[in-house]
Image 1: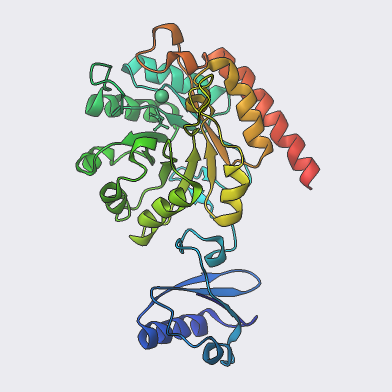
Image 2: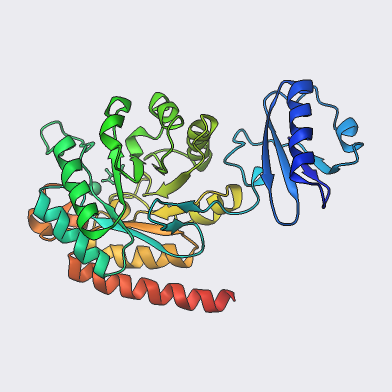
Length: 339
Ligand code: PEP
Ligand code: MN
């Protein structure tokens, strides 16, 4: 249930009213303060609440029941877009285009540091790289794990780029101390115990959509993290499993407007894992930007032919540079259309 308060309600009045509701109805109340109005979001069993009695209170402008099972992730609870600010001031969801780029796997210190510098020079604002790799085969390269994270931290130190990397198990969390954004991979989107642990920490989470998960399931996974208190979550659409086999996955562009409508959280697109083919990455990225994505996560490798994972979908630093130029030009053009 959401309660929109009258214009002019002070933050103190809103807070007091929220506390009163929590006591009277045994619910949790989330307060969102906007420029125009404030909204109280009630989470819990609200079936016994008499809407007319709430409506009759002088502070209340209107009351709506929220049918959707996701609450904190719901735009109705938080009408403005959520903007995620990293420690170095980089913002995601503020209307800019946040490009994350780097190799699928961290393969060595010089490799990750070299790629970091080149993607930074091309306009990427966040470095990606996997240390714990969820591979389909147990015989494939599994990642450099803790050693890889150390190389990634070195790349961050040298370039100043914040880093995003995947976690596969909650017990690895102590190793992620210096990571700026923790990625939950597609295969772990419904690992609810992991999501609950990530709800207890204070780091932004990049939540990738599961291979066969619906948009509502993705929203519910974000809700798991947010319910624990960590509200800095961003979605990542990375292609879903369909009957099509030409591409590795099918990029669901419609997830962008859908998620932006249903939720206030930023939406990132991963064209690399969607396509599985490097030559398609640029087109899919352009489509994503045109459809309103807040950012992209793109695989870039110094030597794709010899990459230890996902070489076929990785751009060279030169290809990435050319693609990034087009993406920023498109973003500027869209900004002027939307002005
Ligand atoms: C990755 O980002 O390297 C990755 C494994 O992605 P996904 O979880 O989307 O397959
Ligand atoms: Mn990959």
